[in-house]
Length: 442
Ligand SMILES: Cc1ncc(COP(=O)(O)O)c(C=O)c1O
Image (tube, rainbow, N blue to C red; front, side, top):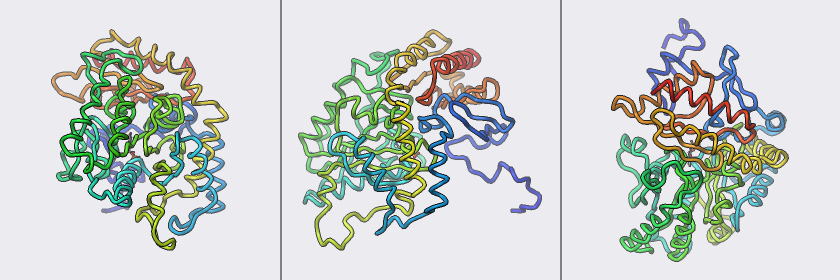
């Protein structure tokens, strides 16, 4: 390339992820600053954040205690080797997460993204069974419309066609449960739908087909997030737990979105009274200020690995940046903010207000369904002109350029997830802007 005649902000070289690059570069959408509930465009215009970045800035943007913790740590210990060495803050964070996690999920393995956390959990599941002499348990069961990131493990157990079809072979030996969403039975439900618990029985069918002795783990999001917010039918997750427990199959909850207050609790597991064997987390753990993710694993799983000579590695897995010092202190400061500001309780109190506000969009032109749970909502819009995704894309452009609101769009579904610090008037503002977007695109 010829750098000398390029302006410093030349848009072309950056290949923007999960983005229509050509359209974006013709009319870019940039955020140059953020504070609390808002982003700021490069010209300083305030944009209300209706999806907490990507479901991750749960405590609002640029929170001072988190910023300060990162700044101080950067000057004190920038990096410590993640293998064979440690640093005090990462142990402290693991202990705090163990207190937050349900049951005996007392062990934290750190990664840097939700995708890595999912890969980690799948590998731990395989290693666990092997360590116990059940190495034939290699199959995984995911779910249609599940999203578990974009590693080969995640797209294999995930159920989003667009994320799979470009990439050929994936992990072998993976089956998928049916998605739990059925519009005819569940349309415009607030919270967990009454219909659909029986869909968990499909797991029994798959166990009968393959035999339990070949199945390592079932992985599901408690609420499917990226495919448009699909809350679990009442009783569904409990059933999955009963069936997996009966057959020695591990249950993994992917709580990358549902953790850290999004559903009013530390983890969705607590909301649903179901303790899985592993929980994957990311996003809200550091309020997204520094990338961090990980897996909470049960003591039973951890103990299964703690055999053999004590000088040898028990799990051949890890990342250069596992438990990075900046991420560890960001995590600690974030957990303090959640506690000190009572943000999980706040999310519980706001849930009905938020659900009413979102549900009041029923009747706007082309709104086909609305689902809400915790501080999450999915609003399905009818596609225009036989072109799925076009209405959603136009909504994205209109929100940024005309209405100064940011809400994530998945195809033609608006996915709303405000920071847990949102006030009732913030929620009303988001609702009113969405009404304008919907009308303008009808
Ligand atoms: C449930 C779930 N799992 C995994 C991931 C992947 O996380 P990351 O993008 O950090 O790799 C996501 C991201 O949205 C997610 O929602």
